[in-house]
Length: 121
Image 1 (cartoon, rainbow, N blue to C red):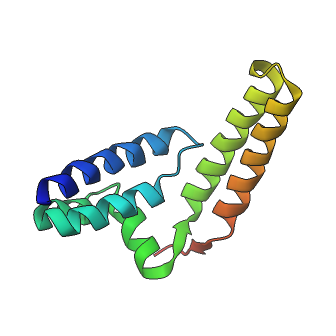
Image 2 (cartoon, rainbow, N blue to C red):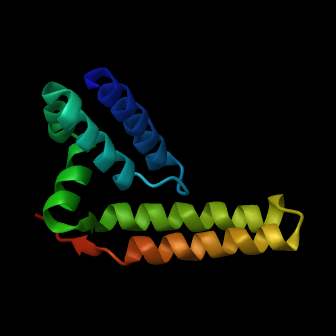
């Protein structure tokens, strides 16, 4: 089981890192899942992830405060809307596909903004 936890945690870690650059893919939930799997499979990888310069703060702030940093909110919502509008205006030919993309964009925006904003430390 230990190797399954590590492999699955690595997969979710990869998805979380990709989510930093792709606005439709959520970063924090994947990183939280990776941390939980690493906790069960490899304490060394778990501690590495929490101590990571860029990824650790996502996990720690969400775990401790249930909050997302303001910068992360601004970047994620901005990229989400840029991508969503690009798809609706230029890529999707069918009205129902445009509508679904618009609904997903609005839904993810509401979800992101529903979390508290982490204050600067």
